Length: 121
Image (cartoon, one colour):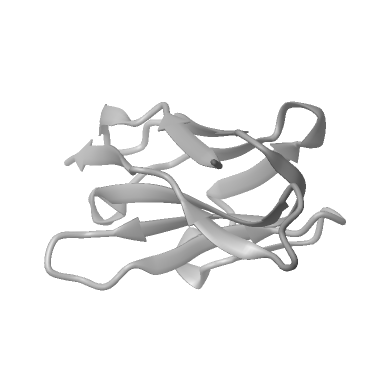
């Protein structure tokens, strides 16, 4: 079974920073893309940032220049460094990976349980 555990969320004032982490555990043989999504109350879940196994990144326009996604393949961990936070960044942040468990015929998507980020004005 593959598990994703996020950490690092919390309450921060506007202009502040937070660093989210997501550790992937379980019987997974390879991880392709790793990503962060977020969902604010009453809104859909949207992509924040994604990083491929080759290190290519892409970001939502709303976070470009403020957020940085990175990954440590040796630790099966993805990070999201969030700087210059704004109240509109308030949401539950979810980790997502596309990977293949051992002996599985194909890749699947997996999600973490989410971590709350609240930015006060």
